[in-house]
Length: 237
Image (cartoon, rainbow, N blue to C red):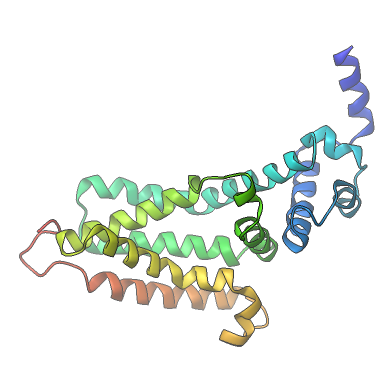
């Protein structure tokens, strides 16, 4: 009987990863604009141009769809930034020279910039994340712990700072340094409503992402170089 129901359902609802991706993309946009409680499953289905019961078929309920949106964003982030992070993680146990570590850190930030600003759905993802992480948002309501992709990226960046500075920075100071370096991108990402006021940009174009990455690389290199050991000293001194 279950098999028969499944076959019947497959004749009614559009199938495939393309349809699921379309629903998720639509949901990210609407959840980002209105919050979890501000949009219904039926409204999402209508905007995605799929039958309303298909959301239950694919995701069980609105909460399941929301969780799929969160997982999708985490997966997309790691696909974009993961290779750069993994490349630096390989360098850390090898005691690579400072220039290689700085370049690796910059590559992480450049990959992050492409993810945050360079993709067609970047703006809707930014709104979704802002809603998700806002006080009273779904992250707080469900007791979601911060971790996963974001934590691994942050830990990798922190490890680079700690390796370069050695014992000349406390753990808290190293965290402050890595957080402020990453903040060069995060402030633009989270303050999208004020980008025009801050930068005079009505939109974040490809050329502006390139310019942003170039500035971030120069500033990151200068900051990290300021903590590199004096000649004749190892990074752990």
